[in-house]
Image (cartoon, rainbow, N blue to C red; front, side):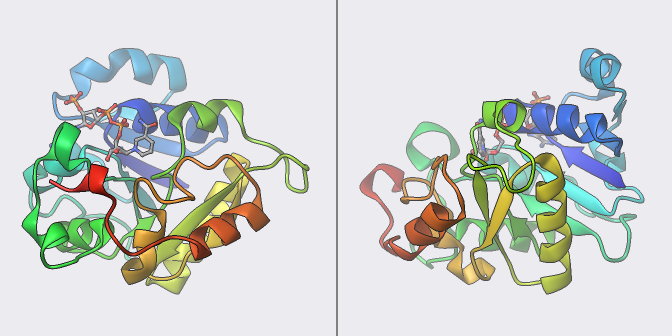
Length: 220
Ligand SMILES: NC(=O)c1ccc[n+]([C@@H]2O[C@H](COP(=O)([O-])OP(=O)(O)OC[C@H]3O[C@@H](n4cnc5c(N)ncnc54)[C@H](OP(=O)(O)O)[C@@H]3O)[C@@H](O)[C@H]2O)c1
């Protein structure tokens, strides 16, 4: 599959490693330009591109940059993607440490991914946001393994969500359907499922136990 990855940090870098190893055709971009991604490209066989080119022809695009940088993406960043592209949002809102206060999230009550998709102008599938980047390398397991981790996946577009869940299965993880983007507060930072390294039953239980109230540590 042709996959575009916007962001080449902890998560984007490790997804580039794993998805190329599975044989996918990966284009990867950061903010500074492809010449700064030579090492990652040489290591993985991915193509380093400018951010404007990352989505070109892609069936899956992963947006994995700090939340505060989302409005800096060029307009039309997803133009040229396949018509049925699934756009994965890995983002989290860290108002105190990184992102500053975002009123639309805190006052208007938008989920973090709803805010992101409004900026992108395209529906997103929320996945990997509570997954340690290192777990992408260390924790893949074959289907049926007793210690296979499950990841929550939220999104409104059923076909895109199915495509993302199949890709995550290929990466070596189970998935749990966490509902639509308006439900995705259940997997935001400091919820029971955030960072949980456990299987389907525990992830399902943790999603059910989440509180809709924004945790104090994640208010700006
Ligand atoms: N770290 C984790 O384990 C983890 C786990 C789950 C979810 N997340 C979430 O996933 C997102 C990414 O996290 P991360 O830890 O991978 O971030 P990171 O290591 O800080 O890397 C961020 C990447 O985004 C790129 N970037 C920033 N602004 C950009 C722009 N305007 N256009 C294109 N690329 C841009 C940066 O490029 P330059 O270096 O060129 O600026 C860098 O490659 C965050 O929302 C984070 O909360 C992180």
